[in-house]
Image (cartoon, rainbow, N blue to C red; front, side):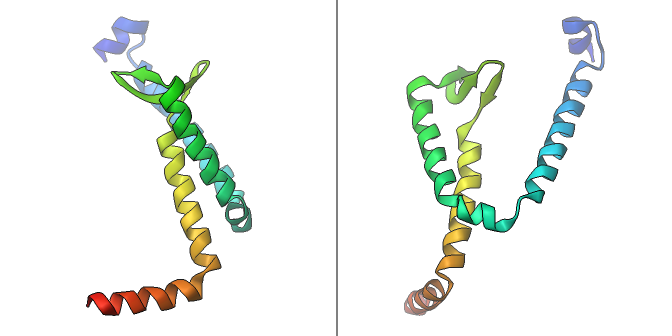
Length: 116
């Protein structure tokens, strides 16, 4: 509490900020849960491509925080593309496994039996 008191004359500064972020995260998760699975599957390729482009943008114009250039600054908002790329990769892999389920199943067990 002393840091919040010193910075903004509010002992609950960080608790209020964390409550705001928690509310935003809860709201975004509710919106995300409302999106049908077909939409995630249909746009998984585009999401993966955009996340790769964003990772490349970080190399060029990434903003540095604590000595690490991992952020894209968009005014007051900073985005860390690595976190979005994790979601995109999981969506793409899930979409791939749904599309190629039989091929993956037969090839996986065939190659697994060679290693066993």
